[in-house]
Image 1 (cartoon, rainbow, N blue to C red):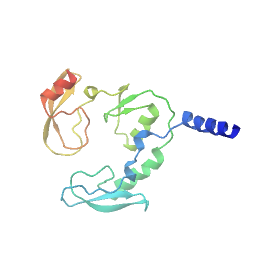
Image 2: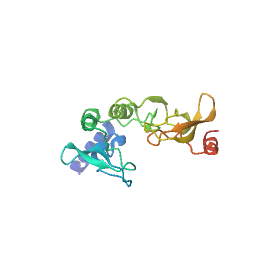
Image 3: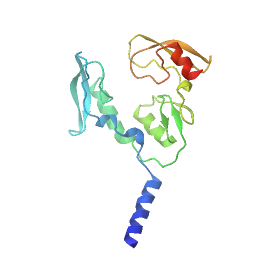
Image 4: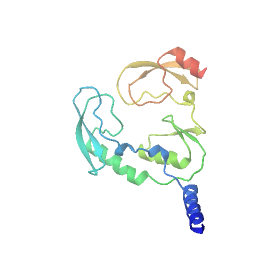
Length: 183
């Protein structure tokens, strides 16, 4: 009986003091290689977790996942980065809205995500994210997709050009969809 009680107290204290960041499950460097459904010939690199190194593969140009890098150096830099960025975070719920449109449960989780992104995620505000509070984000691809976003400054839906990948959720195909969500 005493051993059971001690075990429960130990487990409870472990969970009360720290947790692993939920944003890191699964870590993008531990995702399986995905070539995607398209048939382009784009040499890229992915991190092979079982071999512990970055390996070249042919990406088809669409689909896939975040375990895909343009250069060997980018792959090694990012996947080694996970080893230095990941840390246990206290179980404290003080939400923070990141510029990637995600709500992080604490400042610690936000800092881990920011570290993993090489400083690309900025704090938008304290509290949970609202799609309409996010800044316009065309993403890093160079496609040409006319879209609409809600501008907090003008308090109206405005047109912008979406590049086709990444970005955030403040991205609507029609003006009506933007207005329905944010006005």
